[in-house]
Length: 432
Ligand code: HAM
Image (cartoon, rainbow, N blue to C red; front, top):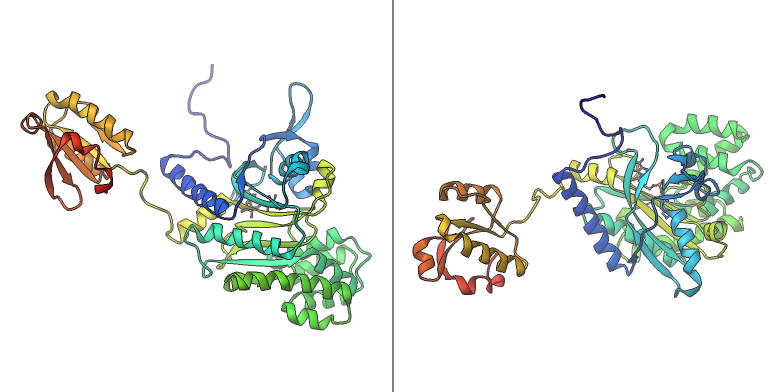
């Protein structure tokens, strides 16, 4: 028999209490924002038929699947993303739901990637998606929700930037520059790496995709223009003008809502997943030290492909791993692991029964209560109260108890006063 330490798998996290506190902090913020935007929460199974991903997600994510045959011989995969599950579930119910539908979820996802800072083999992801609306106002709404999910955690426009583009615009630009015939997926792949690999790398990839050097020059130049200049430079081209116009409307709505300083038009952003059909966006840290925190866009054909229901949809996924790194870098991680309102201290063992009754009454009122689990000196108990970060110490002594009172100490100020034990449990609002 083998013995010794068994370690966890690479890329999988143990959530020690301080890690869990941060996770809960992030999830609570996400849930508050989800609710504020009128989204309702759902979940799906972590294990899905393999085909759910091979049909539409694209090669990159399929190459990272945890896939296997289950004991019944079914080809299955741990979910690497939520969107296909969402599309399947939504298609099953869509007929009976009032549109637009707004759902959010916080699934744990699994991708066999090379673990590194901000990238693991499991992560949690806030998914917010809207179904049944083609108006650009829906695109603005979903981007606003993504920004607010980060603002809720203390991040501002000095910390994060939203890069926005539209695949219809990029597609129209390809046609305008005479590249309509070549494989758009390969060209999108080259453009997606423009920022990462620089212009040289992009040119090499474009050449490999069959784009001539002069066409590549024209396209890359157009990609660098601000949206208005891009529109002006292609004034005679209807598909470009239409797509650019639609994107301008999204920007306009977001500006009207006060998000201007978060936004950046970035024509080269096309995103890795195969199913996007329109607006695409990613949220990055301003210093560009981490990978994207959030990515999403419009996927108007996926519900039809996976569920046989023809409905437009859009949404985003926001990962907890990169976000937690950013919060740590910016000093935005809350230090308090738990809240302790009251620490009950017994002068002698004779007060134990009264202390237990009082603790129960206080806990019933929602207060966070601790006491020593063995008889110790008063000094040691006060020290424990300090270490626990208790807001107040409630001291039960024989003399006080005989008079029906306890001594209440404010741990921050050190002020002490006597309170009738019978009323203590009823004065919850007075303290904290
Ligand atoms: P995605 O861009 O693949 O989109 O992932 C969204 C975010 O999840 C990323 O920006 C990143 O923060 C985080 N993430 C992804 N993979 C990892 C990983 N291995 N480790 C840590 N974090 C990771 C999607 O998944 C789309 N399904 C989002 C979506 C929803 N689009 C529409 N609706």
